[in-house]
Length: 193
Image 1 (tube, rainbow, N blue to C red):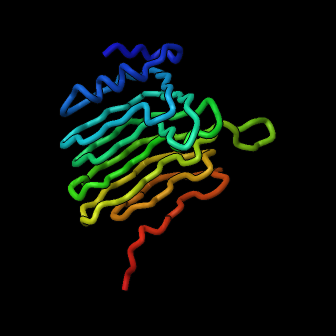
Image 2: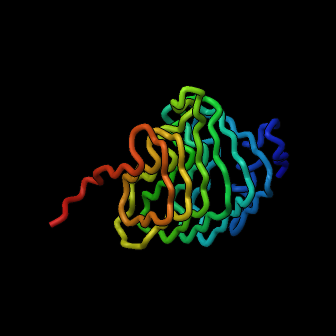
């Protein structure tokens, strides 16, 4: 689909074309991919039984603002995202490196594995070029089908994982040097007896 992976060329459109035009699997070869745009520039949406392999990829993001989520997963079922991939922010203030949102009741049973999300420290030890959220998980569904986030390393974000949904398992993750929260669990509006 034309992605170069040299860290200089803008690969946003090429990767989004690969997402949009494949129904079962996308394997992005190792390389450094420059991602631009402020409103969910990379979105994988409404996929079923889909695998995204990101092993050896470095994604460098320049977006800023409230809707600037580098990589968004929306309403996917039986999605597997794997690979030892790195997400870096080059400007301060992007909302999240990864956004997961399942608002439809069948979107579930997904596994997200191997994200390495890192802001950059300046020489005084204060984080700069932070993501507000390393991983932002929104709206859950009303089924008890599990989604799993595992084997992720998140560092120098304001919040490592912001969990605003139900039925997620977070395991074997390392979250360090986040200025607000490691894992923030927000109310889903449900009451439990």
